[in-house]
Length: 350
Image (cartoon, rainbow, N blue to C red; front, side, top):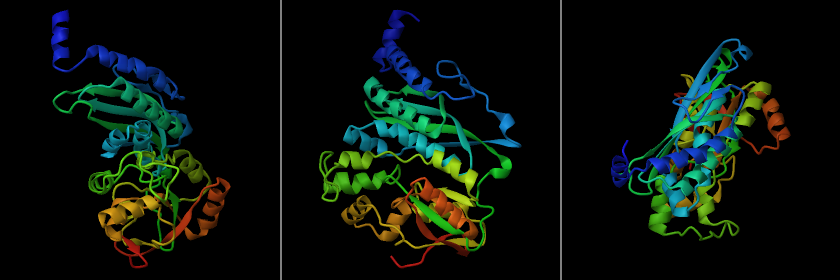
């Protein structure tokens, strides 16, 4: 390509040189996530990975893809980007882990109107940290500068994960039966869902500023409360399913408990949950009050303080409680499986 043509491309808003610098900055971050199986990573036309097939009787691959939604806009408002990368990995890796799969490798997609190397480095340091926590190699990805599609510094972020499991050990709710017990593990906050409503009621209507501190959190301002990363439950899940008989697990994302728990329930069953079994984090109370949102809708939008639900046979309840106590985990007994039409039945009125 001639120098003139390259300048014409730059005048259209795309810098090849800036893109190359971007990849050079990512490569050492990705290298820190290498694990057994990586044959070739970032830099080629494709990543190459060899799973340890011999460790499994009947190995199957489990894949997932997700993004972080409008939490991107909150991160821009706050000027805090590192957590977005962790969020991205968490949204993908937690989803396959609750099916009993061990994450193997992760791919990302980042598109912006104009690449900002400083913002990118902060985001990708978070992706690398998320991959480290999840045990997945950052094997590759795509970075696109797309002026005219995205405005200036606006960007989008998506991820894709591949994991492995024994077919017979896939955890998908098929073994759920009457009386099975539901336990909840806390979220770290809002996680990565419901931020369109958060922005509407807190930032646009109430007018909070990043440095404001709510009365209930004098040691932390709104910028950090709203950008707190999603917890990566993967290491805990993998150890748990190796030691405890688990019927199903639920990563509580968009739709809250109301929409996500039924995804693992077989026909003929519902889940009865006591919504007063745990204390709701004050950030949700603040959102509800500011937006005059009904409690029913709050439970249908947000995780309400529960990031992971574990379903076990009644006879395995003590074993699960013992395991979680041993790991120093806070947990709550939420309820049990009852006859019904694949829905959540809250056993006390809102």
